[in-house]
Image (cartoon, rainbow over the protein chains, first blue to last red):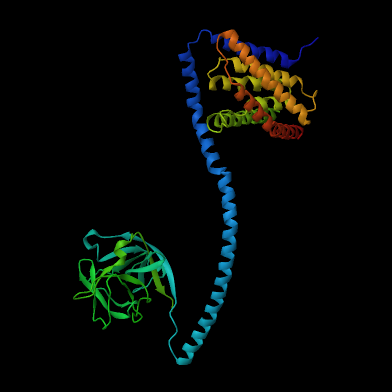
Length: 265
Length: 168
């Protein structure tokens, strides 16, 4: 009778296992523990990774909660979307009406802008508050006197203006440069004037209109400005005793990236 | 031919590695009332029933070897028991209707009890006490029975897949 291959294999592995079992009579527990610990030490990274993966990806209660929350959130967002669609339609109607009326009154058309994201490539330590260089020049269609802004909570903050355009870089005159001036407005009270450099990093509102300028109020670019879009944030009022002193807002922001606002027509 | 053999061994190795990971995770973190299901044992039986005695012997030996290192019990005891159980389950291949849930339950209860009894006797022979509480045994058996159906189902699916690949 011919015995099956599995039987011989079984005998072989049985013998090996039994030999291993016999060694436990001689091996001291310390040695055995050392081998066991070594084995677990080698294996543990795999186990930790698998554990981590399972914890991260198989969070069933969390996923169920998310799905339930997502459904209600989806309903809410759908409602919001309908609301906004209505508002957009209303705004379109108003815009066309506004355009028609402007034409009827013979007023100039409102300006439109395009936005170019640019990186600050050079800030000279000797003229830190005067100017800086940004990437992009004539190659990107940047023009002189374009506004350079940064973003704070979804709002544009004026950093300066383009004063020199090169092939692939541009020079920006900062708001804190003594040569810089811009027509500014305090939207809360309607007080306006010419914003100019005062000393250090502060600015002053010269020739202010006879309206109040409360401390902490926002100062923005006024509608009379010829080169900047109105409404760009300039800073906040920090002193109003003798003169209206303003602290520029862009100084509180990181200046590694800026946005250049280019006038379209 | 060589490629087929290589693929088959890769599949076996992957199954082994997955089982090592699952067992490790369950042993360390997913213990319910200080007990966890015996994945290696169940997969060993389920696969051996489908793939035969040769597979049962080899897979049983290596899974037992892993458990030997992972536990503080006698070295070689688990490989000895698992080799025997794998071989026995493999011999039952094509002689048992494994699609029936009753057969699966019977097999799992039998191998679980055989494993514990063998452990107890080996412990007695080699002077290491295999002391386990009745509640632990009952819970482990309960967990084993819970995962029996999914384990057999997975094993059957993998076996079918491997057979299809072999035909192609």
